[in-house]
Length: 370
Image (cartoon, rainbow, N blue to C red; front, side):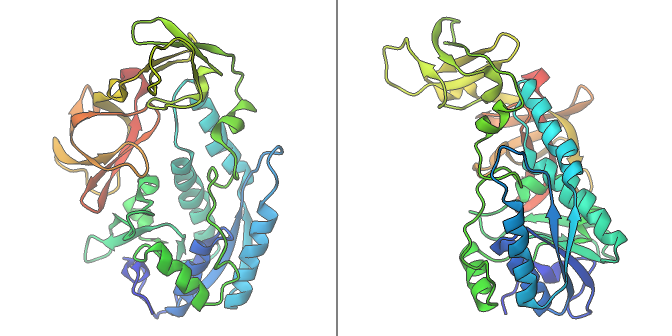
């Protein structure tokens, strides 16, 4: 049996048959998580979380629900379902659309984890008698106190799949009740484990779409909810050099999706400013023109104890980007991040802090203080 992060929870100890509700998406990661927990002696129940899906997207939840049921049948564990569609629409989708209308780029996966999986689902599971929940995220937890009163969030072992960036809103207290069984396993090994357990989803492709919504581009999704009009693309001197489909559809650093009609060079252009009021994009052939020396952070969340500030650490402003060095300090009643070298930080995106593999927390890049 593979060693993995499930046995490092500060609340649970392997072999005592604690009751764990596993959120099953119908995919290989969550299915394998359920299988590993059962093998380790936990009393496992598989739960399919029903969420909202827009009418214009081909309905996939019924197929995913059936796959989740098949996983439960293969493992001989109970299957349950919880309908969180109203919460998801109100707390994730509506919030995301409102941010895009303001010209900032939010992170719906962060909202989904905070408000749905580790919010509504966790509360429901505990009320239904579970001791803890588990998900198929590539992340790890580690007890930070001998009495188990605080739990840290760590990066997943697989650097290509690590999802701690999306989980930084979890509280230390909640993490004592959350398990990530595959956080200590790399993706190819997860597939192999799924085959070993004979899971019917062992060869199912990974989902590539917006969290729980489906395989649809963000632009196509937003067009259904945001009124956008074509506008001008400007160079850094304010000269019109092209056009775009609507400023709210774009983000800082983007190099595709707009047209350059007045350029003597065939080089790529990068968005360095989005102005939804004027409905304009400003672009440059130098991507570093979009970089900032510092960023103000709002809605800051520390997972455990707040470090003494100023504090030097590594930060990520996007999922899968290489972490960069920075100093975090208090400024004007809030939090400021000063990068070691200028860095692209898009308003609305999450800035997540790390000390090595330890995730300290994070916040939202403030659009009002670019």
